[in-house]
Length: 374
Image 1 (cartoon, rainbow, N blue to C red):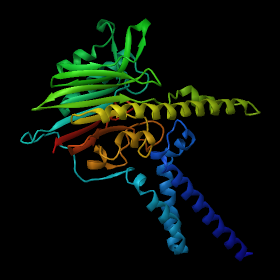
Image 2 (cartoon, rainbow, N blue to C red):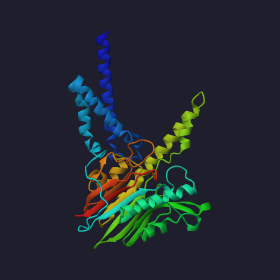
Image 3 (tube, rainbow, N blue to C red):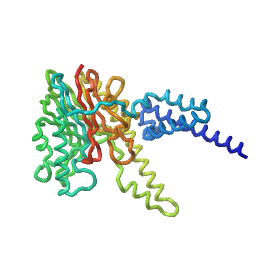
Image 4 (cartoon, one colour):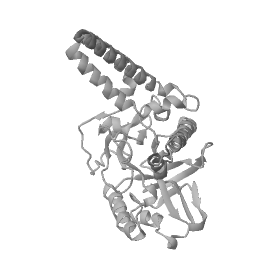
């Protein structure tokens, strides 16, 4: 009996290890599989960190019990190393707010500010101190360029908070906005924005073919050169509290649970497909750019995804991987492994330093990077 149980356990762990390795390798195929067609595999990109941990767990287990079976995990990790390599940063440099002006350094800050509303449903009275903290933080980092996603403004500033004027007071007189969404009754619009301390000599908005959202471009006169900054907010899952609340209310046949699961699944499928198309559009704009270029944005997708690799490509740099540390989480809801906000530096840039700025002022954490031209 003891021998049979040992045989069963051994087979169970081998099969589990092989299945985990295959799922991991399937997830690692993301850079080459367009989510418009292979959207189902896109779901695996969200599980990549956990599949990696499971493979490492099996590796340790077999090291003590049957070392030859460690090859299952080792081979999978070697094949998928390109994806493993983007999951975490291993740099020790700490971010300094002081800039060495002997070498011209361009500091860029990117942040999904959730329409400046903060976390949760804050009242107008509660929003004011949160706004003050947001602008104080931006001021303290003294960035040359600030890119916002989900930047909300009122068409008539007296109807609400004048965020544009607040940015001008901080020393950002030059800006370009995209009004992707509007609330007619409130005279309110939201989209993405680029603010600069340096003159903007060219600006352009390109709407996505798959949604009302867009990518913004701004050519900024900096030092003796002109650099192009891209910013965008790619399709989110648009998950609401109601989507999760439906799982808590089910009938005895489970009909409501099936409907809730189907609704959630459909939203995620649509987002994966749309982001793939949006990434293709942005890539074309990046490839046609003849200037030193930087992309700052909320991709709503994790490292290892088609979206990430399409935009980063082989020649652009992920500023977090160059100078960051840890898993770099930027989205504070759902899973603790969601790094979905990025600064990507094009060819010709060197990443001097990078930081993910802590704080609870939005559901996203801002990211900031100092870039130097070669």
